Structures are given as structure tokens and as C-alpha cells.
Image 1 (cartoon, one colour):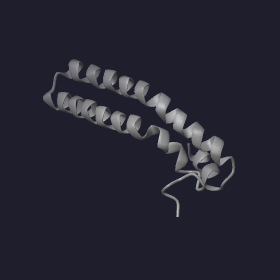
Image 2 (cartoon, rainbow, N blue to C red):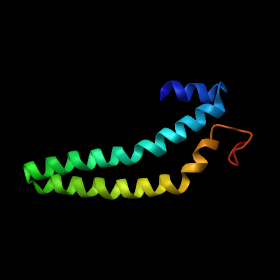
Image 3 (cartoon, rainbow, N blue to C red):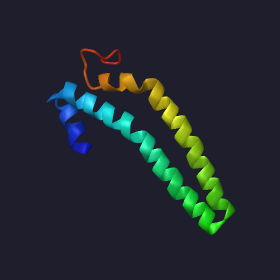
Image 4 (cartoon, rainbow, N blue to C red):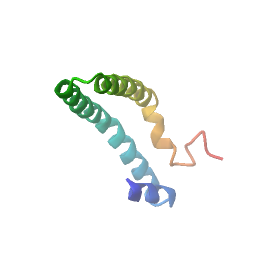
Length: 90
């Protein structure tokens, strides 16, 4: 991701790079949230501690909020790296 960021900022392959980043984020965030939820649920059920259940609940809540934000703004994310198409460019 670091190399893709450098390529995008150096104006080398910025269109292809921005679309690649946008599609990686949009396609990998759901499996990432499911994996994290399963792992934290496993820890919470194995330990049974209240603190682990609180961490699990906070993670689920933040995953839902973050996922909703990404789904609402996901298609605009590819235009941040392209100055000619970005409404946020100077």
C-alpha cells in the first residue's frame, strides 16, 4: 500500500492506482470485519471476561459505522488522487 501511495502521489499511473486502491478497500473491508469479529468473539467466549465482551462490542459497533461510511463514500475515494477530477483539489 505504501508503494501504491507513492506512485499515486508522484503522478505515475494515478488513474489506475486510484481505482486499484478503491477496489481493494471496497472488496476487502467486509472480509476483514468478519475475520476480526470471529477472532474477538473466540477470545471473548474462551475467556468469559467482561472486558473482552466490551472490546468485542466496541469493535462490532465501530466496524458497522466504518463500513457504512466506506459504502456511502466509496465511489468518491478514487478521485482523491486525480487532481483534474477531484472537487477537493486546489
